[in-house]
Image 1 (tube, one colour):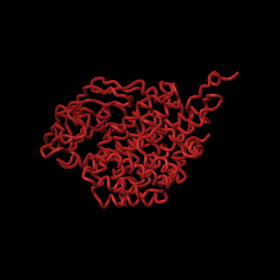
Image 2 (cartoon, helix red, strand yellow):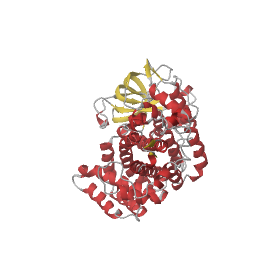
Image 3 (cartoon, one colour):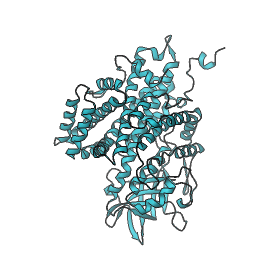
Image 4 (spheres, helix red, strand yellow):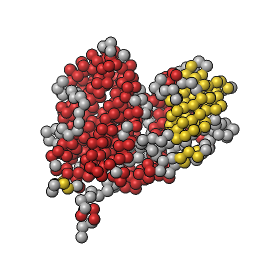
Length: 531
């Protein structure tokens, strides 16, 4: 007698899948960007994170959001499990050496591959993981402080206890920049810092304080000589709780397992990071890395949605045929697979630029120019992508049981946090003002994608768009064009057989809907999820 799910034409649960072994695009992007030696370790990582147990825990963490209790935030045990898993894997610190210097290549690519797989399972806990990893870049402006905290940051032993960071096995860090009067223009911050011996005392507020159960925070405040970055621990030196008073936790659309808070500072002690007045210059080192993680995470969300859509289509029968064998559904799935391939290819190539930046000025320029562009394109593509994948499941996709609803609620966050679309494009315009660097990066992309038709014309269009007096009005299309160019160039290296199809389908197009497939969609589907 057949099982009930077979009799009722219901696909089996999507679980116990090796997230690396079943993802050819990821395998090829990792190899093309210098991390081929990581393949065996990534295979094991993908098997571990693709277990049904972790998918179930992700749903539990989302369904049981954190709660504020006095000074402390209480999380569901599932959240703590994910924190322990990710810290055990070193996702919060593997791109740094023990002394806080940049780890050798391919540290960024190897970590990104893992981060991308984790994003397919549970996203909320990745906020403190990202903030902790990125904070080291800002702490480099204060070497004495960095030296003290690095042993705790590089520890893999997650410690959720509420006590001074010096007493813990490991620490995590959060960030606070946004205030009530505005998030983008941080120069208008009103929070005040006054000197007090070798430290400062801070009074004010933050409208959005990430990861409030972190052991310390990097915050911006107005010091006597201007906006400055500070290290604010949860506890004072004498062991008393510091002057951080959390007002509430945000009730968010998605990212619900993670806590985001409103906070007031009353006589909170803090230590300066970098020079007074240099707060933006200091914090932007951190923000560059958090933006990179947003792009990686959104690429992972896209992959997660595609995997579930393909799984459903390969098991569901409609009109006497598997869904995946219906021409229109096949076209939709192949079209989705094309964007997923491009997302992982371009984000891994960007991570390779971060790996090489210290020794190669062109790669450093590439990272500066392309980070806002790639975050803009991938993170803004993800919501529409996840919706289309959700529709592949029909009504099942719209209910929480099948995972797509949670992915859809999660999908917008990376486009909004760490700089929304317009902010990313303004950063892109600023980076293009260095004409020498811009020409070098565009020239490199043009050379890498030279086999594709119309490359020279697209490069010329981008150059014209950013050089006219009203460049802001043309900047969003120019940023999208540059992202598509970068993705095509990345695919030429990691998956050349896909690059031509991607370029033919995506170059020169404006707004579009999914469902226009390349001439032969079957190879794309087989790459996306081997039968």
